[in-house]
Length: 189
Image 1: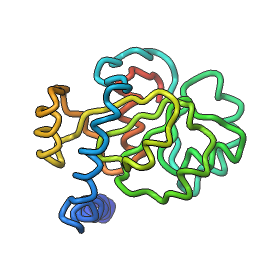
Image 2: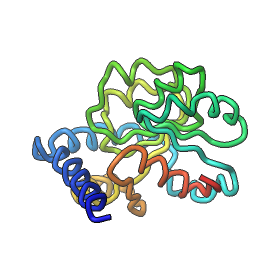
Image 3: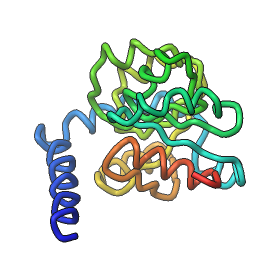
């Protein structure tokens, strides 16, 4: 009802405001520093529909994850598992390796990121993601364009000759995972 909708918008405002508490400096530094990774990254917009008809499972690090870990272990070879942020380490602790890791937080907890064992798995990211943590990834990188929150990000991409349609990631890494699965054509999700 009304209160759920208000809570939804409150969370969105909080997440958007947290990006700007340093006037966007952290995001801007990551965007500039991450330009060097584009030469080794696949451009995600080119992968549209490539996983059509393959089931996709979205995993966030919320409290419900522990309850579904046994089921995830059973189905991990029958679909694609997308793990967002801290969910990667939680899955690894249960001996489950996701098929895709997704990141967009400009400053996630370093220790939690470095505690996972999925550095060879494809990592889907936006340029706003922590540049120092992106350096740690050895596997394939899949870059998704910005979603419109930072117009300067599009301008920087254009200065480097990069043109890609905007990719709205949503307000959280779980929304980002879902958007990636939809973009790839996963069905069902």
